[in-house]
Length: 51
Image 1 (tube, rainbow, N blue to C red):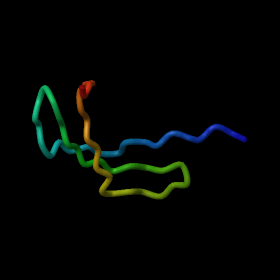
Image 2 (image 1 turned 180 degrees about the vertical axis):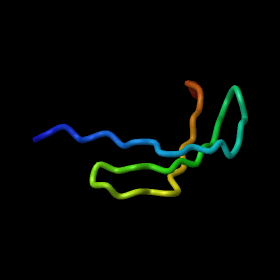
Image 3 (image 1 turned 30 degrees about the vertical axis):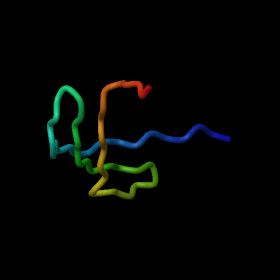
Image 4 (image 1 turned 45 degrees about the vertical axis):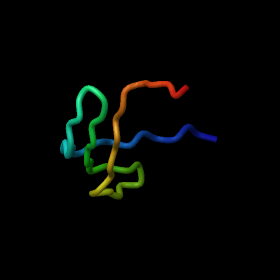
């Protein structure tokens, strides 16, 4: 089985900046099959632990 091909970020927009804890981004993604996902949302958070 061949390894999966990577997605390409075509465009990125920061929707919310809660630095240093959280960022919410909207991306436009190019898929390996030449399709485009216009609204792909990504949440970036710092590493953390729950006790």
